[in-house]
Amino acid sequence: MPRVVGTIITAEYLIRWSENPTPLPCDLVEFRLDGFPDLADWLRVGKQIEHQGTPVFVTVRLHREGGKWTGGDSERWKFLEPAIQNLSGVDVEVRSELAPAVSKLCGELGKLSIFSFHDFVKTPPSDELESLLASADRLDGIGKIAATANSPEDVEVLRSFLRKPRRAPICIIGMGTHGRETRLKFPLEGSCFTYGYLDVPGAPGQYSAQELTDHFRGLTRA
Image (cartoon, rainbow, N blue to C red; front, side, top):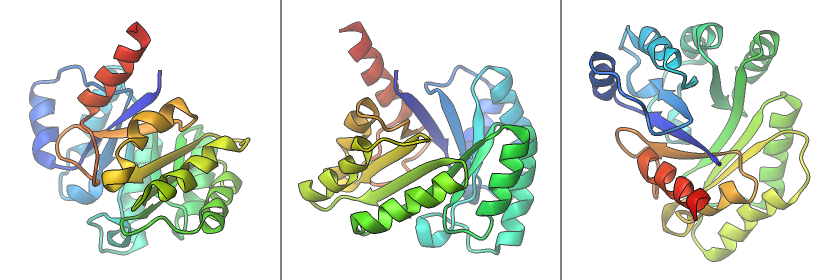
């Protein structure tokens, strides 16, 4: 079964769920804290979800990579460090100055570390993307590439990374109209995660977590 990550971007959803906790239709949950940095209760709710058996990791996505965070890295570390200490791990941009600190602390504590790159305009050249995946590998984490596929050729560029032998898992996602199919197909070709929203879409072409989970469960029953 491909692993479905359910993303939460709004405080309203998190508060409603905490008041009436129900099983979540995903294998992991991503807290996009750049969407609700002022919610003081996020760590408690994260532990509440984990207590039900679903791992939670935290992202504070930079504005330049499609997130809402416009502050500095020192302020982001105030979220990422307690997330590593108390939850299952974090996602940080592979080019971030925080990446080495994340790698070190996650390695010491045996937590999940995802080192990501997002391009909401295009699919960069394959050698640039391969370099980013190599950087994530050196940091001992999962390399994640999410790029906008403007053509079928872009989809094939992204697919090519799944055909190469890797020391560590990678996550490859195409965004946009042409990339939508990759959220269903790439997990069957070697991408370790696929992302779906639990509250509101966080990227073009994104399915809901429920749709993804239903799709992959249907394949196993077929």
